[in-house]
Image (cartoon, rainbow, N blue to C red; front, side):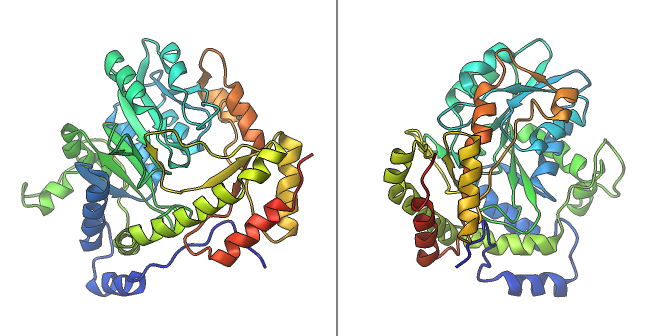
Length: 378
């Protein structure tokens, strides 16, 4: 048997919706399926407005434009995140300030944020790793006290919550991903969730190449013009058709993923304890969306041997983020917060992600678990 790391789930209405989008003749952005998908997202997250984009990267770039960042402004974020989190703000000339992650959840360590704030700090980006919420009560309080914008990089977190409140609803803006590896996907896609009503009008303009085209189509102006800076961030309605079907199947997809996550967590517990391996930690008050399942091996050599062992059994496992603060571009464009990022450097060398997708059946999960158990660390 072979078990891939990921396989995209095909939801019930995808092919029918694709045909409907193509036959309807409205395949560019903000068509009928774009509106349907946005409505579903708003209901799911409690967001005031969801704007579909071509990727989570573009949603983050859109947030940077809406912040009116200037060269030299600083944006605090974890070093343990995907490169898009930093790129979005560095592209505007802002300086990513890299803060270490917590050793338990691997999220931005809220205890280290305040020491990273300077008179140039404009925003904090909270990344919910594996869909487990950051300590949002502390981070929200810090942002409010220092007058900083709070952005959520919620690429992993759709369907997760913190103390009963949906992830993606805390920051003034939140970026979502619908890449093929995410719980719901359309190949490539994203969304910017706007929780500050005062940002909506300008966000529409910036997303529409700096024009008031959306107002024109609503009949609010007699022609549309170039009124602000912007770019083309609209997702095709064809991709929105795929996303609509996926979002309509969200509960079914989540149930399947949680079943896989729970089996890994329960049936690998004894093996992990015997081999000095750490499993994911979900704090009280956090509900995660079963986005990924990871193990922390004792060291880099152990991690590499473990991946090779699984590969030999036909199981595709993967490591994850490498520290941004030590990357060539991170050194060039960013700076490290006081104290450095020793936890990030440590966990980046030890983390392994196991296959997790909605269509991974019971036999496949059992095969992965047996393959893991057959390995002895050290």
